[in-house]
Length: 323
Image 1: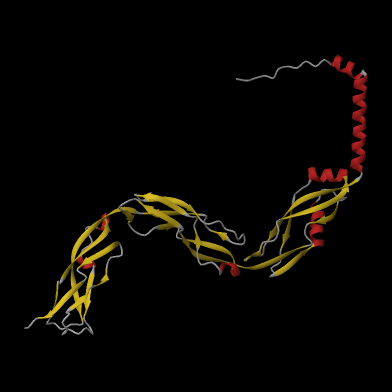
Image 2 (image 1 turned 135 degrees about the vertical axis):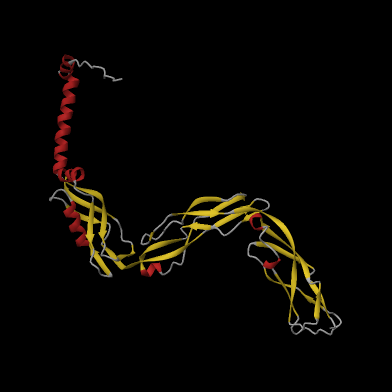
């Protein structure tokens, strides 16, 4: 559906009649006075402030060691006409400097003023002042460095739940690009804090990297995916043989198997057996003819993914058996 604007009837006779009245003649006089005042003002010299952006063209394989300013505030002087023409009709509000491949250089005040004048629309405008006397440029050889992503996390699991395996990050490392002198200080890059409560199932979610406060450095990634495998755990009991070291063959220990309890995830419950553990008694250097013929049991091997390993008893008795 199309809508038409309502037609407005203009009473031209009423307008002519209004401008013949004293009030209409006064209004016309004020308008003519304002126009002459504006023409006089625009013909005079004025000053105006401008915010001009600065861009830099870097040599190949070079980057900034310290970031130079990307804006400069300048004070321009010229006739009002020229300043207005420059403001509304200027070609570009950015000046560019093509930097030579030197380690350290300065952009002088005169160079800045020259570029600002070239950037103005009118040739009758001069640059009176600017916010910088000079700009110091420090360049360094650019390179890349691969560093691991470090997950900053606080994880709280629901009752009887734990990690099933190691937390995975994708990607697990990022590429840093920038000056060698700065990259050598980085050995990793942390994520923002990942805080999770009452975990009871596996989750995968994005996590942001810590913000980059060094504009000289570029990061290949800003977000990584974190995979947190979670499973329920339970307790299991097995009997583990006791291994005796540093003793003659005729010496026997009692008990020769010890009940061992531990906590394991449900996915590994059936695969864990006594072969995955090692309990030892080391009799090397222990007098075996003493009245107190006991020795402590040491846990020397266990699977990485079991927790809270407990065994009883904590010691064995040893004695000689005659052939």
